[in-house]
Length: 134
Image (cartoon, rainbow, N blue to C red):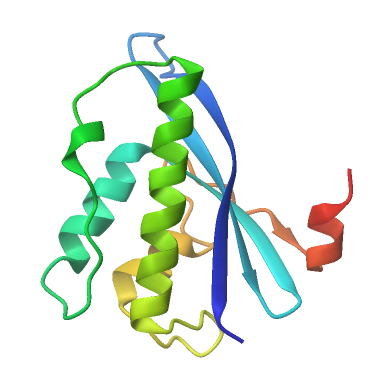
């Protein structure tokens, strides 16, 4: 089963010393009956784009959203929509499968529940139905 991803939320967080604020985008990833959530920053999306940009059929990521440090809901919604569009285009272009490891390694790692980094969530849900319940 092919991977699917949607942005289901965004929150503003701060570093441990409260010196840096940043937005965390909650991504719900589905593959067959498996569903998991990862949290990613815009800078991580941009880093993924730089890793994929040389591959044939790699989607474009608008630079217009790079330099603003706005935490306004409208701006965060625009970025969330851009992330969803970018990741969907990447998954269509590369036909990724997490279970089989098919697809570019940077994209699989970005969407992996095991790829925690400083911000990711390794929370794996048993089935997509669980993720949809309130």
